[in-house]
Each structure stands twice: as C-alpha cells, then as structure tokens.
Image 1 (cartoon, rainbow, N blue to C red):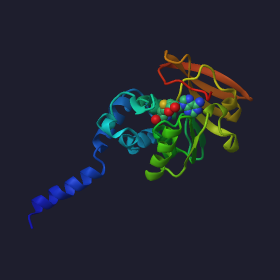
Image 2: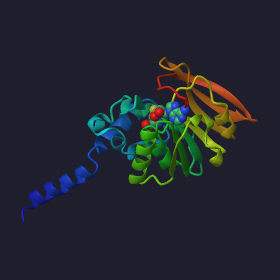
Image 3: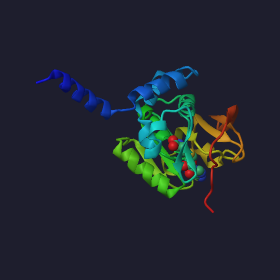
Length: 227
Ligand code: SAH
C-alpha cells in the first residue's frame, strides 16, 4: 500500500467535511477580533456556525466575505461583523430565552442557538421562513423554534424574553416587543426609514420603561407589515 495516496485520500475526505473552516476562522480573526468583538463564547459561535450553509449555493464561495449577501425575495443575510456585534451586545447567557424578528436565512438564529437555551425566531416571508426552518432542522439547531408571522406582535406565548434581536429596520420600536422584553433585558434594533441609513439602537428595559441608546449607522432591509 502506498501511504502517500492514503494520506491524500484522508486529507480530501477531511477537507470536504468542512471545506470553509479556514476561511471561517480567518473571518473571525480579521473581521471580528480586529474590530473589537471580545466575547469568547460569541467568537466561538461565529467560528462554529457554517455560514455557507445559510446562503444560496451560488453564493457559498462568498459566504465569509466582509459583506451582507442576497438570500432571495429582496432580503439579505447581514455582514458577519453585524451579526457578531448584535449578538455580543445582548450579552447572551446559557439560560437565556431570546426572540429574533427577521429569521431570513436562519443564520443569526443559529448563532444565538449556539449560545442560549432557547431561540424563537419569526419571519414574515413564508418561503424564507419555511426554508430557514428546514435548514435549521437539518443542521441540528433543535433549540431554535421558527414561525411565519408579522414579528411586530412578538411571540406572546413564549414571552417574556431575556433579549430581543430585530434584524429588519423599523421606523419605531414596536410596543409589543418592549412589552415582551424582561425587566433588565436588552433589545437591539435598527431604527429609521427604510432604504436609508438607520441607527442601530440598544433598548434596555428598566423599571418597566425602555431606555434607548443609539449606537452607529447601519443599513438593513425594511421591517414590513402584513397588508
Ligand atoms: N437575521 C437574518 C437576516 C434577515 S434580513 C439572517 O441571519 O439571515 C431581515 C428579514 O426580516 C427578512 O427576511 C425580512 O423578510 C424579515 N422581516 C421584515 N419585516 C418583518 C416582520 N414584520 N416580521 C418578521 N420578519 C420580518
């Protein structure tokens, strides 16, 4: 037996199992750590979730680039740095129950799923919601529950939430979401007019009241409402 060939065969098998591992680790180093993402657990989650499985096949080779990517129906998966930032700022703890509005590809939900006990995510575009649900199931994120609905109303049945992540730009913070946030909990949400730059806003609920802090300008797809 020629061990040289055996070695090559084993190498091919292993490299095909996770062909983007190196790119993903580079993404974490160059795009996240360099820009100040510090949480070890968030960095580990970003290192382990296979972002290329959440983008259309023709975009897989671009999955680890420093940019958002189209996912169909005029929607986008956010830039890795924005996903990491929004995840880190809610300070996810292992016993948390988190609500996400705007499932999209399911990527942000998967990252959250690595860090907290339960994730509830709502998508308004049925096709995207269904595709994300089966993707999350096949990739093993059993602690992520999905629903197709207008996220404006939150998910009353599972409220209150320790944290809420909104990944579509709203003109104002939906009152039902403030209501469903635990006292002491944090919500991160882009606020502003659609198709323009919005302000990423951190909401902390204290004594039943939302305290808001604007962070930096961002560009998200619009928060839409059912007609
Ligand atoms: N978090 C996603 C990015 C989603 S882009 C990811 O990781 O891939 C924003 C998503 O919000 C889009 O899919 C859009 O359809 C959805 N959306 C917009 N308005 C919504 C609403 N009112 N309720 C639920 N989802 C909404």
